[in-house]
Length: 168
Image 1 (cartoon, rainbow, N blue to C red):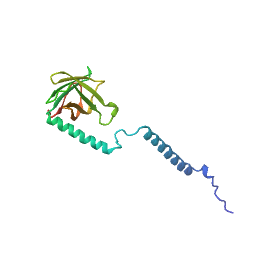
Image 2 (spheres, one colour):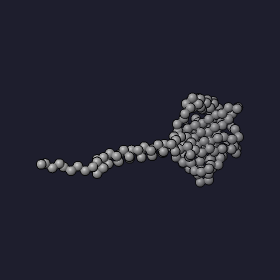
Image 3 (cartoon, one colour):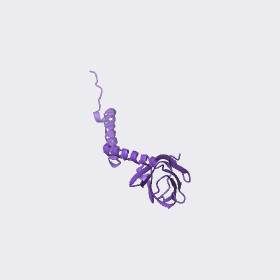
Image 4 (cartoon, helix red, strand yellow):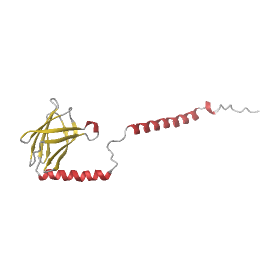
């Protein structure tokens, strides 16, 4: 009589547990990714493309007005004193200007500086903290009831002069 090999039950085999482990790992990993995605929504995506398109047209109109007024600016950021200095030239000289320093990828690093006129074409503003690295720099002013805008991408460093407008 031939002896039959002894087969152990399935739960004592390696391969069923290996497959169950892979399935369990994928469930845990998928759940982790779902929780992470839910808690950290993307900040750079817009749901309303029509409004974004209208905003782009408005920005172009403001930039064209700045060109018509021949507005140029030289801005210096001093991180040690926390002061932003600016020299504005052209056919506009409002009492206050908005200087937005925008991080391309991290909205929490965006800064808004209110620039106050202290002399003929000279403006100064107080910074909350140091601004360095790659940034979008946006200067917004008003002339004749209409907004104008200078916008450029710059690499900022303390003490360096950046030029906005046609002054490049």
